[in-house]
Length: 98
Image (cartoon, rainbow, N blue to C red; front, side, top):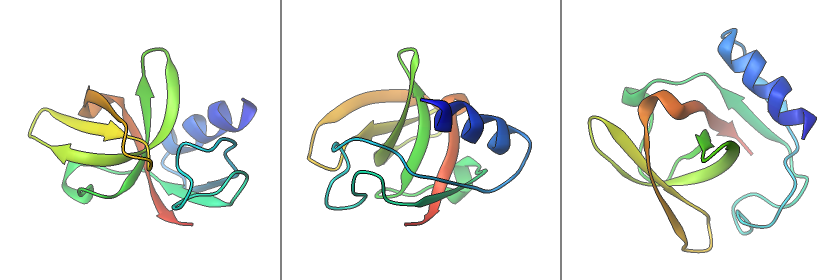
């Protein structure tokens, strides 16, 4: 997935980036191949229901925020499956436009 490494590099450099992710786990919110604009973010900018780009078990996922606490964020897909908790350091960016 070359869009993932390009997006991560851009976000780490402080840039906003537009990607076209593939897959169906976010259907109803983000359709397969739909343009998504991601921006660098910080914990104070992320809310429940937002879509974030996050490192998860060796992969990078575009997933929805289900819950927050000071140390971590709970993620899942848009179909109701909750993956679990990740540290804020694994949050790479936030969707600012779909």
